[in-house]
Length: 494
Image (cartoon, rainbow, N blue to C red; front, side, top):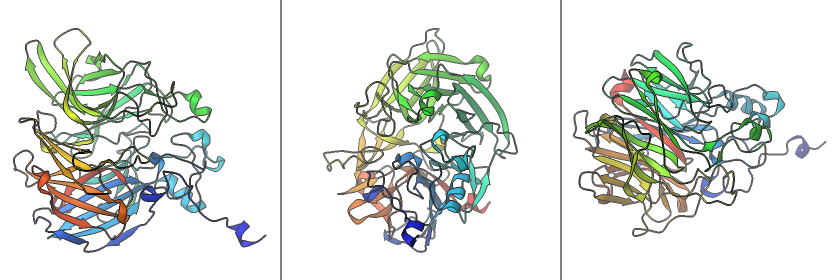
């Protein structure tokens, strides 16, 4: 037997998920004193943590979706006008077992029936979606598993966490909400036993990190509940017809399918009274909630009005998961919608208003103003008046712009990233703790596709079209990511 037979080599498939700018990077590195064009604001002192899905090994089944990559965390540390880069994989159980075997052992996204026999019963959590900073700890999150704690200075994986045994569920959302007034973290899990079911569990974690409250409720059907909305007094879940069934998974089909024959529902739960006082509202059309801006309340003629602000599309995420009834269906773009629910009236309908007349995704607000009415909104988008669209990629059409909406004036302002450049999720950082709403900077990773390289761009959040305050240039490409988290230096020091 020759060496070629003993070691067939490691080769990723020639597929849109694994080639070109989307190809796995797999580099764990430290780069000190990144090149900076312009000047990093002196007050920008802290760390930007951002998560991504970066396949460590070629997929077990020959092909895979973008979402199923291993969690790779990128940290850019700002201090005294300097910036350093650190990248590390999250050492999940999946990662550790595959690293030891030197090959993929887990199969399709969230489908244990496609895994290798030697990892039967093992956790397939990739911890690849978002970051959470709360009670002085940093977590990497993926909605199909529990949080993984990381050392914020070294990015060393400290282990899976269950909040001292209080978290009984096997899942924890990638989109928890932080209450800027109480310091609480409100989170949830769905498919809590790791298989399709209609149950959703809500968690409240106090500022010291104690999981103080948990309760469950049953949705009308098993749904992908990727995000949620929290106002001062209410929690809202949008149950969308992105559905899952155990029998389909056992047949080796994708975990999720879009089924527009089902109704979209909204569950509204008072934060104090809990699920005992839950109400259901019915959407007039089947839609999918991608990500959320904010929720807030106001007094109306019939009692409390609850406003839910989020991006909504009339299809599922078809670039990742198929349409159950029409495999050739195309993904439709999301738009910003405000849903207004009259909680004082007995009917189950609600008013829908498109408040962002422009395609967009990856929403952001000033987090200090979460859970009450806000004026400023940021999101990723494209604007063909400024530059051409980029070709469809493994997670859909890439952005070419970042946008700011002033909801008081209705004005939209854009920053165009440049030819062959794709900004990712914008993240707002206030200029100071007591700065006015929106007064601060917008951070975004930008893919320089023609150069096969990545930048981190710093913009004046209220003057995007003025261009970057500073561009932090990476000497290489880091993998396209999802969601990030800013942590001030003072918080890191504590």
